[in-house]
Image 1 (tube, rainbow, N blue to C red):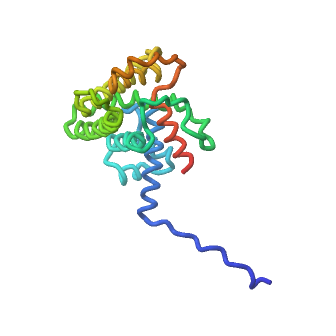
Image 2 (cartoon, helix red, strand yellow):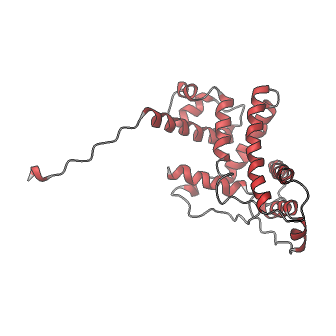
Image 3 (cartoon, helix red, strand yellow):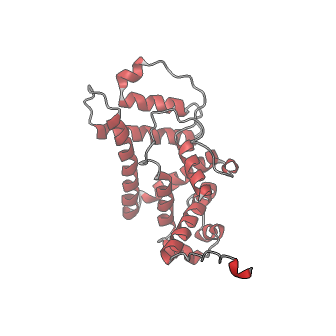
Length: 235
């Protein structure tokens, strides 16, 4: 009987805030790929908007310009740093759990390298702009804070150097390794970076342990971005 059919559930209309959030996230994801592919200076807002399926006006409705969009892309990459489970002293492997459908189609190493190069471009630009350098400093402090958590947790009783200073040295090593890797120094892999970080946090313990076998472990950024890519595809 026709009267016995149940009516389909009513469609829930998204609020304006939800639509705005989805638009903003789509633009950030498109920007990550565009900046990685084209670099900071070459990537265009019109091209990024087109890749996300919007007009250029959508960018200016959500961001104050290219630098603001790049900072949002940096924030997206920094999401995992202060989350649970991130620890650069642990062997990271090549994956972070089950991959989302389609994740294999994303060249994560290319994405990390390309965005890293774009970040170097952005840093050179931001260093000449008082407002941008403040925004960049705030994000680097988040990196240092994340390392501060690790330095505090793994701190030996005999350590006299303040945990904040250890964290700054860890961040400096991390960033330096990344720059060398971007310069083509392939001898630096995740294993060596992890050994260096361990020696900063707990020198005596690290020195007493056998040197781990170098197995081409990726730098920590690779699994971190793999997780972000999985989250993007899962969403």
